[in-house]
Image 1: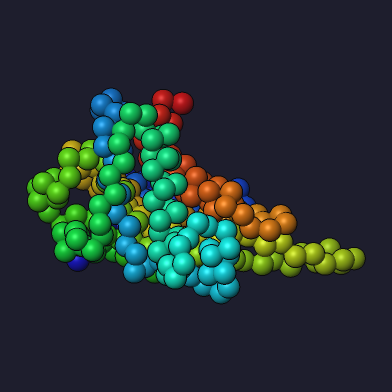
Image 2 (image 1 turned 90 degrees about the vertical axis):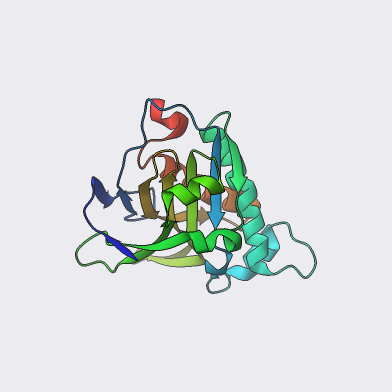
Length: 228
């Protein structure tokens, strides 16, 4: 197990309506490096956590087959949306989804502390850069070690009247690995919240995942957004 506290950049990045967002950059992704031809993704299915009554939103809004477990419904949708987001942010790159269960023994835990008063957060990274380079020839690897889904309600009291706002609230715990250099690029735990105006829809879920990927590729700049 590793504890990483010395870094090139650490901070709290603000997203619209989301509060502070924990992110730590260990190595900049080289701006002059060739665009990745492949981006691998590993998602830990056992760490998809559904809180409150969010399970009913998943089954109401996302495609599913009869009897399919709720976590599996969300996982399939997440993979499909990430596929499109990777292709958008890394033109020409092919997404490769690796089964987490098959490769989890090749990953190790990294403890990251964002502030001296914050608890350590747990992320997964390749235990051996050399061995993991044999697992995939992808230039970049996105490892999602956990996703916590919830629906958050907020009561606004103006003194004259009260109203309730609600949000699709998802925290993603992730790490980005430069598989060419064999280095950890970044870790993050952004809390992405999308306002639900009338009712939650598939578009609400899509927007949440899109904002997550926007966060990933901006911290540090990667993909086509690097040239902006």
